[in-house]
Length: 443
Image (tube, one colour):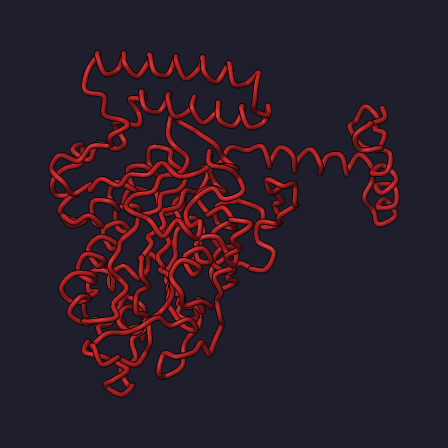
């Protein structure tokens, strides 16, 4: 049968004539047609075997954490470089972290540290876009972030949103953390309320009673009527379909008991909530675990305040490091204990690194040529230290890992082919990760 789309013909086995000729050539090397068919059927059967898709929790340290004062300390450097903190041992021989990360130091078997991270940009906004997409910022072509790509590839499952953003994200002027050219329907479901607040509710999932629910149903019916009218007068079929899908899914999720349960932190025992820490970051990490467990594919947790141009050490010691230590360590231990680590990639990074040399305001400024990132779980190796910076923490000296490589590693773990192609809204073909390569030490 001739295929008008491909210009090939196939027999009843489903093999195109051109492929049949190639198989005939392979038989010279001892591969017969029946043998090739059996191999092909076996491969197809293996490919159809069900498997649990890997989800991802991305801990985004907004502002740019200091690599020297967290996971890549320089104990032997001069005081103006090493700073005020001492170091402590970890579960990995010879690997030390800053003293204010004692809980995380006991979890280093559950994640890997990328000390060879080279952020390649030291400017807020454009660096955010680069870190969140693996592409340099282009104002005329905003690229989709990781979560939006996953939403595009996997869609809605189990009555849950595919992509959720917890906390205020980044400067939207640089199109960070959104669907970009894929379209607004792949933007995250954003939760800006504080999960640590006693009265925490997800507004759009909190219908007070029957009256409010009926009001929602009336509005949805009106919206449906309006869309039906607009279909005939002003919009393309593709745009209408995309928006219809978005509204239908959003309406279904707003009224979904599964979504309400997933966002209900009150269902967690107090001892679990205490373990994560009664902070916005701690409860956001716990909520992220609940969402991944409920079927959300990608959750970004934002923790702000890392832009420490002044009073770096005071801010780290009193606020940033204690809440990070408790929350990140608890998340790793929890996903491990619940049997989720193999199917959940946990990633940690920020905009860029910070200057190795302390400035006159006891702070550290932006630094584009060295930083630190972490990831583990979801098939990514744990307990590894990838790369290194020089003795002053200024430059990467071993196994450099660019943002494009982080992107490739994330997509690799999530099962998204790196050579996936999309079309921009003006029809241009766009490759998902044209430059980056997965970090070989981790995959």
